[in-house]
Length: 99
Image 1 (cartoon, helix red, strand yellow):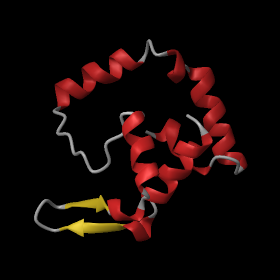
Image 2 (cartoon, one colour):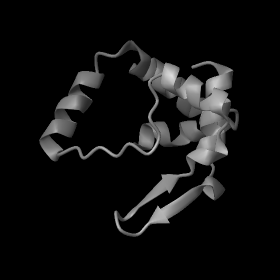
Image 3 (tube, helix red, strand yellow):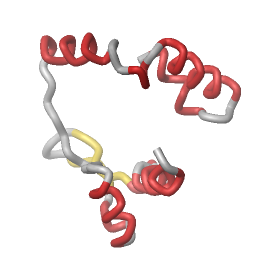
């Protein structure tokens, strides 16, 4: 992931850029916080904010089993991200192994 895309995602997913949709019972993110160029970059990377997907138990298990063959999710890579999270250089990495 490039740094520009990561910066856009951090801007979009900030806590103060969210609101609770009581009707649907979930948190959504305000798209108007992004500039047109930022929205275009999200579209180019096939990133669709606020797209909620219902995944049933058996389907989720199949997806998780399928992820085992993804080189980007090897134990070596995941452990490196976790260590970066513990070390402070990538705080989101702490949750990688817990999830």
